[in-house]
Structures are given as structure tokens and as C-alpha cells.
Image 1 (cartoon, rainbow, N blue to C red):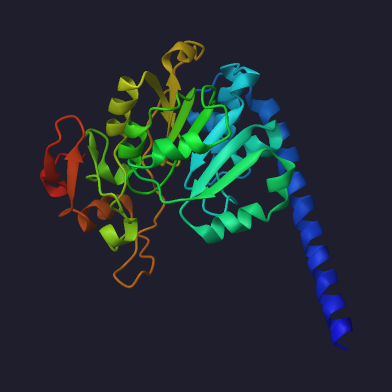
Image 2 (image 1 turned 90 degrees about the horizontal axis):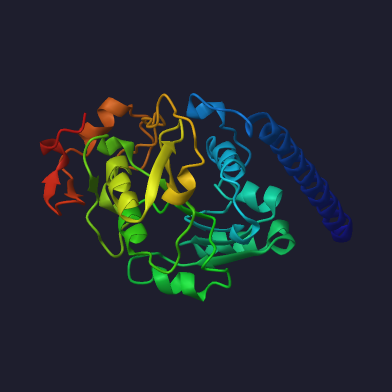
Length: 309
């Protein structure tokens, strides 16, 4: 009887795995069709080229458009992504599967990395996965330990919900063609501010609301210019910003009507950790007493004392 039950459970698992495999194959096929629709477009708005396959929002489309538009050489078919969680929603998974790029992915959770290493795509593609908590002190060594060609990185994607600004500033051992970085639109659009650096920064511990993390779009534009990048656009969801190396940016021979978007997703929490679905104009009020650092002047100020509109 136990054998029959065990055999039955295994058959169910096989059926579910097959359905999952076919579903993902259908997704990739859909992505290929969408690439053909957008790659020759001259977009007016960023959402003209957005689509979602494995990304959280429309970033798969933006990435595919850019790698086609910029005519990135094969030697640069390498990516690095920080903060991938279990890699089910990420900026580079479609790039891995559809374009066969090589990659390094990092996440603080050992459980997430274990799940990734036990997924079928892990052996099918050239992918490194490592569990580590990223900070200024270790990031360059982590990158140097990778087997990827550090001299030819096509895309770097950063989403660590905390020291994003300070980590990108510290990176010196790679010089990617495109950088995608998550910004915090709650910090407004006219101040160059970031959370002050803290080695073990935790978004939830910093403030129960989960709203106090990262840096403003203006802070990242300031840093990008120092590193030799031009700002392309944010996604329409208002959470990821795109920067392109200046020598490549000249291939973008059009102007978008709008390049910066405010996030509308409602991820705030109450003191017990429950979602509160707080809208934009109310989110800032919740963290008004928190202190941020102006990345240009290094001056510390409360958010309440800054003009963030």
C-alpha cells in the first residue's frame, strides 16, 4: 500500500513538473514573439518596449530592446545580478534562457541559492549562484572569485534593498555596459539622497514599514555620471533605473517623452508586518523622521526637512 501511494505521489509530481516545463517553454516562445515586435520600434514612452516574462515588471522587454539596439558584441554576453531571491522573478533569467548569456547571481538566502542550484535551468546554462550578504567590504572580492570574464560584463543588475548606492560606488573590478539598479521613489525626484551606509543594513530592521532603503534616482544619476554612464530611463513601474556606458549611448538616437516614473506599488507594512497598501503621498509621511545622506555633500538630514516634491 505504501508503495502504491508513493508511486501515485511521484506520478503527480511528474505531471506537475511537466506542466511547469511546458508553461515556461510557452513563456519563452511568447517572449521571442514580443522581441520581434519591439526591436525595431522607436519608442515614445518606455512602456512601448516593455514586456514581462520572468521580470517583476516590464524589464525583460527593456533589456531585450537595449541589447538589440546597442548591438552588444558576443564577448559581452555575461551578466551579474544581485538580490535574485529564488530567481523566479528576476531581470536576467529570460536573458539566460532566451539569449544563452552566462551569469553570476547572488542572494543573501542560502535557501534561495539551494533552490536555484536544484533547478533544471542551473545545469542547462552557464550560471553561477552564490549565497552571500553583500556590502562594501566584500563586493569586489566576490566578483573577483567568479569565473565570468570580468573584463566583458554586458549587464549588472543591483537590487539589495539597502546599500545599493554604496555598493555600486565601491565596485571597481568590473565595468559593465549596462547597469540596472533599483531606486526608491519614496525619496522623491530632486534630491541626491541615500540611506546612510551601514554594513549589515536590513530594510525591515531599519524601519518596520519596509519603506526606508536604497537611494533616490538623482543619487544614482550623480554616481552614474562619475562612472561614465548616461541615464536612459526608469521602467514604468518606477523601481528600476537604466544606465548605459557613454560610448554606447550614442546609438540611442531618439528621446523618450518621459524618463522617470513614480512607483505606485503598495508594499508598506505596519508594525506587525502586515501590508497596509499605503499610496505614494502617504508613504513619505510614515518615514519622515528617518535620516538620509546627501551623496554629493555627505550631509545628513531628516526626510521631513528636505524638499522631495
